[in-house]
Structures are given as structure tokens and as C-alpha cells.
Image (cartoon, rainbow, N blue to C red):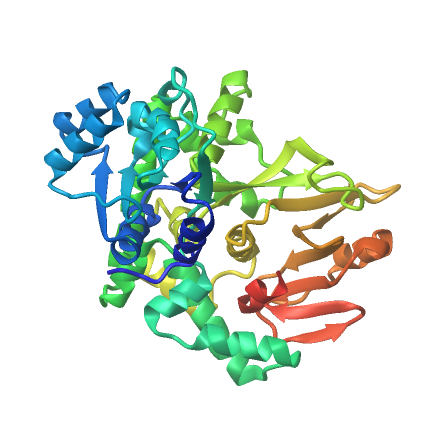
Amino acid sequence: MIFRRKVYDKLVEWKDRYANSYSVLLEGPRRVGKSTVAEEFAKNEYETYIMIDFANTSDDVMSCFDDISDLNIFFLRLQAITGVNLVRGRSIIIFDEIQLFPKARQAIKYLVKDGRYHYIETGSLISIKKNIVNILIPSEEMKINVYPMDFEEFCWATGSNAYNMIREFYELGKGLGQDLNRKFMREYRLYMAIGGMPQAVDAYISGKNFSEIDMVKRTIINLYEDDFKKIDPSGRISALYHSIPAQLSRDLKRYNISTATGKRKTGKDEEFLQELIESKTVLVSYNTSDPSVSMSLTKSMDSYKLYISDTGLFVTLMFFDRPQVVNEIYSKLLSDKLPANLGYLYENAVAQAIASKDHELYYHTWDQKASSHYYEIDFLVSNGYKLRPIEVKSSGLGSHKSLKEFGKKYSKVIDEQILLSQKDRCKKDGISFIPIYMVDSVM
């Protein structure tokens, strides 16, 4: 099934403004929909297109890249092999899974300069060093991140009008009432459970039960595992990935590599962690030591948290060792009967929502003087020259001391203090209490 995706609009902008000078590289984890949206865009916006899947293409196509000194010959061969007639200024060539064939990525520089056609590249795990060590990375290349479907895209796919209604209620600035709040929370928990991977969404729309949907997500995770093993046969990258829900559940100040691997941290582990981050299967949030100055300039490279890039995959990873209780778990999640200490599930959903807006993720911790207690703000989002500190709660509103203390400490740079939870909207003590399904509206 072809879903409406926001990245499509970004491709339209690229075509209108930049395509004559730059190719575009769609980056994202496997099965996020990069190839699908690239081909749909090519079909709709161009007269003809050629799509080359480097994971499954012929030696004849590969051999075209052996010599690109004469582009006239190159394009003639490519058209003859694929049977597609390219039209100057009205055709596009898609290089799918380009990280598997470095010669094609290096050729982008010359193909773009030639100016006859436009070019889209798609890639997963694009940063694997062994695949780029001997090639010149083209400067004529723009990058667009492709994320799992967000809540609005999920509503488009399922035919729900919930997101549009939520936006309208947010603009009104008032509470919704218990009935509407419960209704929208059920919709959002459904999204959290299924997630935004197109295959999982398609399985839901097709009427699959939760066991079948969960199996789709497990298959995707297994594909990631296979990719990790290509880089690291020892399994340490897989251990880093699987440890994320458990470490978030402990409410630690930062992610701990040794906790994940069960061994003392090494320089190699740091390299593997970077490979994991660059695979786009995870999101990284850095602890900023002084958000009043600049989050990017004061972020700590040694103090960070990791989240899973998709809320649905996160739910599956939480109970990865218990496939036999899948239906029970999903039923409890949808009816809000999971244990109250699963706030990290909602935290991961908020991290995904912030990242999907192309915001970097930051959080902030500080110690209370003369005490072992410390405060933590889950997320910090910039709004111009001001900051929006965000705290996430799964059930009640709690005492939210961290938000109060942050408000005192950084009052000059705060735009709005936000607490996201399942409760209805209100404002008290200078804090905006907002239902978590409105997270997109606060950014």
C-alpha cells in the first residue's frame, strides 16, 4: 500500500529549487519507506525514470559504472539495458541502496554536473566506512532524513480525523473534557503500539491481529540484527540496541555501554555505538550542561540517552523475549492497564516526535546542592532564542519538581514549560499541562 508521506513534499521542494545542482540522498533505517516514496515521486513528477536497486541488479547495469568518462555512452547503455527512454530535463534516475555500490555514489558528482537528469539516492547504514573509504563523497549531494510515520501520517493512513481535530483543539487553548481526552488517548496509544513502520501500519489496515502485527515488527528487528552482524559479528551492536528499553526503564542519567555489553567499555565499543547511531535505527539525546548558552555548544559527548527510532519497534523490543503474551500486552497498552512505571514508553514516543521534526534531541540534568538528589528535564526544544523544557509522565502529573526548579534557574530563556501526560489540558503554576497526543503542536 502506498501511504502519504511528508517527505514527499520535501522532494517536491528539492526538485523545484535544488535538483539542477544537487542530487538528494534519502537516509533512514531499513523498511522505513525510502524506496517506495522515491519511486512514487518519480512516477508522479517525471515523464520517465530508471530505478536501480543495487541490492538486486544485473552485472550489466553495474558494469556501466566502470567508465563514466563518456556520459553519452553511459546513458545509452543504461537505457538499452533497462529499456527506458530518458528525456532531458524530464527524467530522473534512482540509485536504491546506494551504499552497496560506492562507484555509483562517486559518479553522482559528474552526473549532476552533466545536468541532463535528476538523481535520487536511498541508503541505509550509509556510513559504513568500508563502503566509502576509497571513494570521493560528492559535495553535490543533499540529505533528507526519512523517519517512521508520525502520528499525523498514521492518521492519514488509517483514515482517522483525530489529528486534525487535535490540532483544532490545541489552537483553542482549552481543555477537551474527559470523554474526548480518553478518545484521543486511545487513538495515540494505538499509534504507539503499532508504530510508524509502513509494513506494520499496512498489516493493521489489512485487519491483522496484534500477534501478526508484532511478527512484522520482529521481522524488521531481525533485519536490523543482520545488518549489525555484517559490521560486528561478535554481537555487541545488537546488545547495544536491545539494551535501550531496559536502560530507559531504570531512569538512569545516561546510557551505559558496559551495562549493555556486560563488559568493560573499549574504544571499539565507542566505534560500534557510532555505527548504531548512524544506522538511524536509534535516536541519540545529548545532555547539555548549560542550555542558557547553547545546547549544541554545551552538549556532553559522554553523557547521552538512546531511544528506538520507532515507537512500535520499541514496544516489541520491550517484550522481545515474551512473544507468547503479545495479545495480552497490546490489549493492556490500548486500555492503559500496563504498569504505571512504563513512562519510558511515552518518553520514547516523544523523542520520536521531536526527531521527526528534524530537531536534535537534548536533555538536562543537574545536582541539588547539599544533597544526592538530582533534577532532570526529559527534553529541551528550541523556539527561536527561547527554550521549551518538556517533562513526560505516563500516568499522573506527579510533583514535577524538575520543571519548577528549571523555571527558577533559567527563567530568562524559557518560552513555555510543558508537561506531557495522559491528562487533559490545563495551566497551573506557569506550567502548561498538555496531553501527549498534542506533542506535535508544542514544537
